[in-house]
Length: 429
Image 1 (cartoon, rainbow, N blue to C red):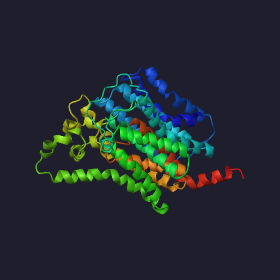
Image 2 (image 1 turned 60 degrees about the vertical axis):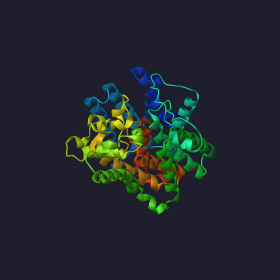
Image 3 (image 1 turned 60 degrees about the horizontal axis):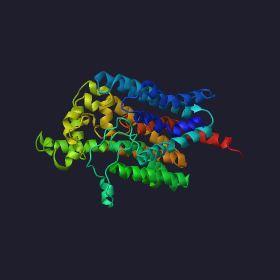
Image 4 (image 1 turned 90 degrees about the vertical axis):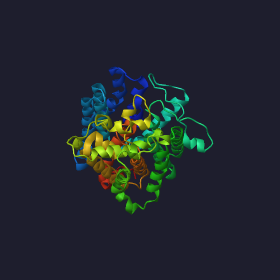
C-alpha cells in the first residue's frame, strides 16, 4: 500500500516544494522526497529479477539526458546549482521507483495495482489543487498574476471569470498538461465502466481546472485523445507510435512555411501589437527557435540545458509578445520538439521520439485492458498538447514526472503476452 500511495500522490509530492515558497530550505525540500525513498526501499526488500532490455536502457538514457540538461543549465546560469541538484535527485528517485515497480519480475497483481495508482495520479494532483484553490490558499512568495486575463471559454459560456493560477502550478498554463491527462484517463475509465464514481469526479475536477485556467489547447486535445483510443480499430493501434510522435512536428513545419513566405526579414517584429501581445500566436515563437536551430552549431547536438531558450538567446526575439515582466525571457517555446531541441539538443529529440514510440506501441498492445487504455489516452493527450506547449518536458515538472513513470511502465508491456499468462496462472480457479 505504501508504494501505491506514493504513486497515487506522486505529482503532489513533485510540486509540494512550491507550497513552501520561492526558496525552501534543503531540509524542507528533502522532506517532500522522503516518501519516494521509503517506497524504493520497500520495493528493494522484495525479491525480484531484473530483465535488461533495449527499452530499459533507452528509458535510463532518456532520464540521464534530462539530468545532464539540468546541470548544463546551472553551468549557463539559467537555473541555480542547488535547483539543478534538487531536480537531478527528484527525477532520479522517480525513475528508480518506476523501474523497481514495473521492470522487475515480481507479483503481477501488485504491478497492476501500481499502474492503476499511476492512472489516478494526475486526477489526485488536480483535485488537491482545486481544493486548495477553493480554500483560498496562496503559497508564500506567490507573485500575484496580472489582472485583465479573462477566461475566454467561460466568457463564451456566459460566465464572467478571470484566469486562475492554481496553488501548486506556475502560471496560467501550468495546470494544462496534468489536467488534460486526468480528463483523458477519467473519461476513458468511465466509458469502460471502471471505477465510474471516481472517474466522474476526476473528469469534473479536471474539466473545471481546464476551464478556470482557460487552457484551450487542453480542452481540445483531451477529448481527442479519448476519441482516438476508443474509435481506432485495435489492429491499427500499433501505428500510434509514429502517428502521435509526428504531431508535435506539425507546428514546426507550419512555422517554416510562414517564415519562407514572409514579405521582409523584419516583418515578424511588426506583428508585436494588438491581440498578439497576449502571446497567443505561437508561430512567431516557433520562427525564432527555428531560426537558431537551423544554424549548424556544436551546441545543437546536446542543447543548452534546461531553459535553453534563455541560454541560447532565442527568447529575446519573442519576449515582447509577453509584456515587460521579470520572467518574460524564461517563457518556453510552446512546442515539445523545439523545447527539447534547445534543452537537450537533437540527440535529446531523437531519444524523445524513440521513447514515445516505445511507450505508445507498448500501451497500444494492451489497450483491451482499461488500465492500459487509460494510460494510452493520457499519453496521447500530453503528446497532442505538445504541439502548442512545452510538454512533456521539465518545464511542467508534475506532468513530466508522470510521463517518466509511464515510460518505465510501458517498457514492461513489450512482454504483455508473458504477463497475461502469469496473471492467468495466478488467478484462483
